[in-house]
Length: 444
Image (tube, rainbow, N blue to C red; front, side, top):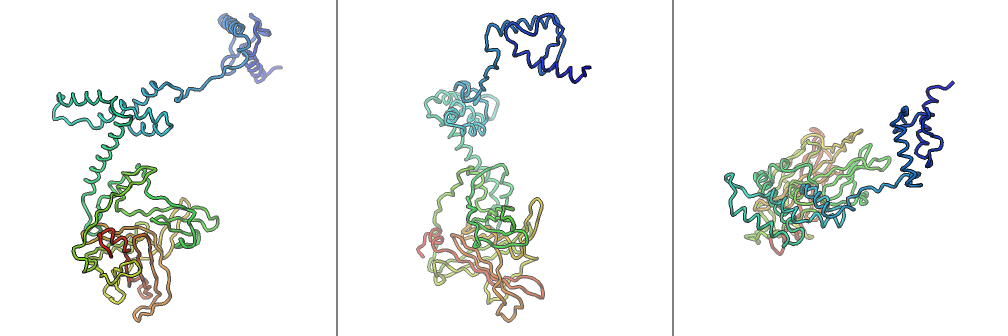
């Protein structure tokens, strides 16, 4: 006795066999009571209309011969095979950003995406002349018509370059307006965070992670080891698997907005050439510096200090550096404490921890004109040097050192057992002579 499942399989089998019938329809004579398979194997009862459709299909197959036995090859529709006129019509509906992305596909798309007729429409829409009333000025109408007539006279991509140039100028003007207020302590714009946009993609620095060696390791805990790469990149590796745990970037606010907005994803923004600021009295040495130092981690600040009226003399030049003393070891009144327990906090999706004696140091050094002279933000680590020889100190001495192409920082701290806090007893900057000569136009 046939079951419902067997009848359904029989119907599906007839449906699969129907397209492969030879001309003449052997095994499917008209007028039989068999059920014909519809689309996707669903069956239906044959009626007069179905029999007519079957005859028509068989006649078509007979006329085409064996071409009915195999499915025809369908060629996929590709944008690259379209005529240039159709592609230009499609490109005319794109906005500027999408059109620039389309130009990066291949050489043909690049040339088509430079079409002046498309870009002059985008340019005219973005930078239409401002009018005081609704009536169009005849001079403006004439200027626009002349531009349209001269499109063919311009080289390919002319209006694209004009659009990009004017957009960059408008972005610079808007950013200059936002960044106009300056912090009196740091000499940097107050609204840097407000000016940054998360969707901008600009190349700021390149790093080579193969340079992670023992010399670049600055700290560790029971789970990870952390490495520091200049400028300001912190890399954490799991101790057991030696795999990447996290990456932290520490970017200084100086020129950060320009680097984030005026560069591209492949080409970094280049700072304008520096014009030397002539020293009015070189014989008096370097004077009038102002230093702002922050030490922090995960939003917790251990130190925020501003030091004014710093100076040095030509006699302090040695080994290619100028020594600038900020906190003197011999002057107890200048010693400063670090507030709280120093440690660098880190967090992943599963684990978190804190590496003792490590933190982030932000340094902003202003020259006598109040201009940023040396700026950096980098992870640093305190390293023990043994018990202190001073009579007033009861703890160990620790060193914090930082070096880059423009200078060095050396800090000495002492751990006070009674109060359980660190005291900064010495802070010295070493400025590279080449940097000073380039900045002031001197010949030290």
